[in-house]
Length: 311
Image (cartoon, rainbow, N blue to C red; front, side, top):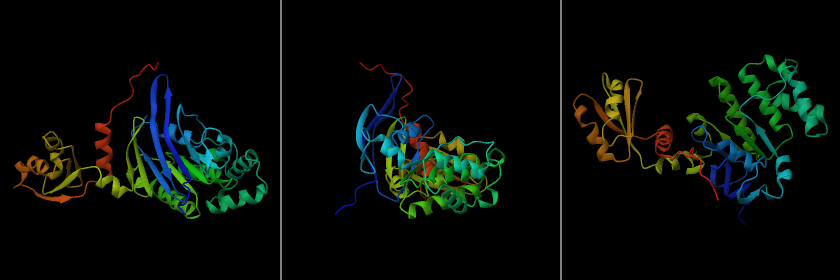
């Protein structure tokens, strides 16, 4: 018997002021999976997350979250969802422990001291428990926000660009913890602009201006992009980006250290585009990156900022 998806939503649509922010979005996700949401700013990622967790009501669409109806059982869904917003929203004049104790009361949890102590230990916060939240660095604020989001042991965790402005070590430790939660059965939805974070997700969904344009594992999304890539090596190759990108058949060209990475939808056209530099540089086939796919989709997506009046 097939396992029932934790999230199974179809046709989710949300409009604000005549503009369609999310346009017939579908998502099916199993327990313990980490799904990354990518897309330009203003493309409906946050709105989609909020509809899934019951904070916003869609104009159209249906589905279930944790087996509960998305429209009629929103209160029950919200009780089992943890939500970490991009902006730090806890109390700066309370300590780490006091913030967690407050959140435990908000959720009406029993054994509050035990739960807070467990959260402090799990997120490595116990030695800083008495420190004021407002005095924490970005990485420690992030840990506190995550501890608060999972204090009530949710089955789904929604993360809205959780590591913006955080140093690489803190981001690595954060993602190690997210994978630990997933191993325990928590399902995670995370919006991010960092390609290395997207690559750490089990699967990704690319949304541009309310429409899902790509979905699958990172390898599946890259393979399905229809892009090809070349790498040029040699003295001064990295200085050719602007000139090569202007040529027919090239979607993008970017320096990578002392090399140049060139990408386009047709391998022969790409080879022809770099032919004038064939003798000066060594060109070899390479793999398109997730960043290539991201930028190509951004450039080709239709901007929905124009307001359309609905009858």
